[in-house]
Amino acid sequence: IAWGFLWVSIIAIGFGSAYYHWAPTNATLVWDRLPMTFAFTGLTALLMQENAGVGLISLPILVGIGVWSVWYWAKTDDLRPYFFVQGFPMLTLPFFLYLFPSKYDQRDYYLFALAWYAIARVTEVNDRKIFTMSGRLFSGHTLKHLAAAVALCMIPRMLSLRKEQE
View (cartoon, rainbow, N blue to C red):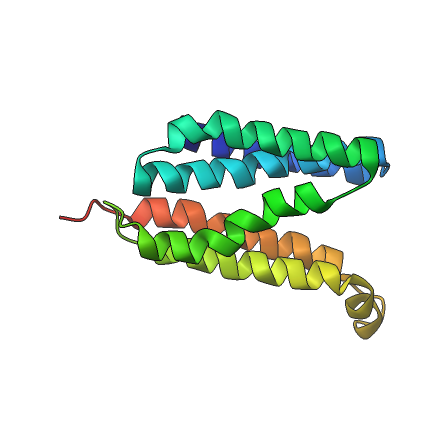
């Protein structure tokens, strides 16, 4: 269930992002951010399921928190809960992989994905600097999308290679 939820979320990110970039407003930004929270919470539930056996229980709770964080931002213009929903799974991922053994190999791909996600965040934060340094050729926001796409590509790669450990 969690893998299916993650893949649907990733597809929804494409549609939500396209909708927002077609007509950028706070109202359309909700539809950009909402599927991202689904993906972050879905990935967290997956890790919890594969490593600690509690993912299916946690998925609806985590998704609910994610939906609330987007709703809260839309109503208050306060991004702190949304940033927590996005950042907490990424910050705890290495510890989770280290502390909880998995029955699968190829877990380094989660770390590769995390590294590309970190690159995406850095390019997003430095959007204008990158735009200026590139001679107005491309922005950090553009690079963010590319780095995030590479991060997402790590997951199917991992799945194609991994096997159950003995």
